[in-house]
Image (cartoon, rainbow, N blue to C red):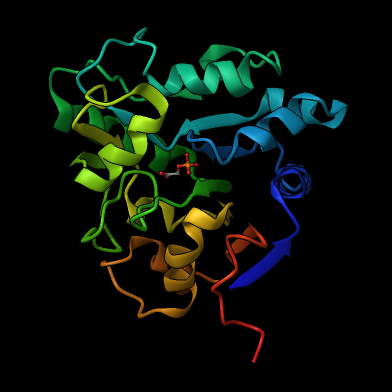
Length: 242
Ligand code: PGA
């Protein structure tokens, strides 16, 4: 994997925005998978401040993951988070975002609907964050590498880490996620990792056995995935350092 070490979170955010803009320039109407979480927020802010990011107004955006069992206008709705963090600041019309219906009654049908959309559009660029338990999207440990888009029960660890966004007892227990098999078909993939709290899981992702136990290791089976990580996150990485 192409691991790019940057000094700190500010540098990570600028480097991620620059690489995304470089990549999308190769496509006429790029389709981009977008994550939520704290990690990509600096990248989104950098894009919002960059006039070149106007190129994204013609992009087709795809939501990586979404809670299930909450209203579409619930403050915890992750599509709304993307709207606040990226689409509104860049004046990208809401219709450009392919989003999960967090209130869908038939979750299996909703997951299949999104899988079909992604299959039809394809993924030019996938931007991803890394969960403290190695999840990608909400592909929790044990997710097989050819898993499709589906509804997933969150692990206690993901519920704990997501409580940082909404408070204890406020994290929905189920979520939709694009599958690892779905994401593996992306033409380009960028993983963003920041901070000491991710150092152990990033070292496992980069150096440990390739296995569904750490879902993010699916990235090592892809050709050409890029990781941008800051020094604190790479503190325990052994790659490239003898
Ligand atoms: P974070 O979340 O960006 O807030 O660290 C990442 C994740 O849990 O996937």
